[in-house]
Length: 64
Image (tube, rainbow, N blue to C red; front, side, top):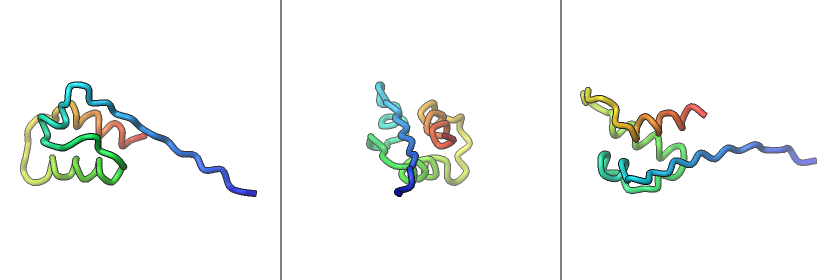
């Protein structure tokens, strides 16, 4: 008997292209590792600016 695998898909629709315009990242961003890469690249170094709204949504999606 095969084991049942549960999967979750999180879909973030960037209707106003915040990710593309504010972060300079082409969308869609597909896959957990790619989302993490975008977040790492956005907040690496000494950048201490307030978190843009798209990053807040991306961080939230990583907690699911």
